[in-house]
Picture (tube, one colour):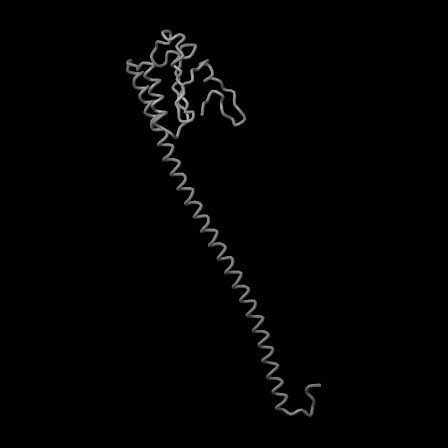
Amino acid sequence: MLLSKKSSIQKKVTILFVSVVIICAVGFGILTTRTLSSLSNEQLSSTKMLLQNAVLNSMTDAGKLSSERISKLLEKSFAPVFILAKTLVETASTNEPLSRDLVSKLNQFALEATPTISAIYSQCEPNGYDGVDAQFIGNDDHSSSTDTMEIYWSNEGGESVFYPTEDAKDKYDNTKDENGIRAGEFY
């Protein structure tokens, strides 16, 4: 045995002191390990949260920037179309409509001036623009077979191509495709 009755008091006190120091060191080591582990977990959680917030903020900023760019692109793309629509509305309502040939040319020019759109059209109800549909029977340059003003221009490989409308009733087709878009909608 390490200590016996004959061992000196100095030896007993030394062993007791060393034992207390070892117990304290082990206890301090365990306490330090637990504290460091807890601090490490807190630091990881904090870092993870900061990183998530930074990524979310970055994604939000990128989304806002993309949204602004798309809005500007749409405004730029639709500006000529709105001008054309306003022109047709104003000229029809003043009883001084433009000629159908000129309306067709305006559609073509608006398409050519706007490289971000692929097609443009102006379609009217029977006698809805100039009230003289009957005068244009058989004129495929700007009128349908039922004589309504039906103008459709498409950009194909950088060239403007006019497509006569075979049947003006197609614009009333409510049949929906697999994407839920009406067949009568051309976008």
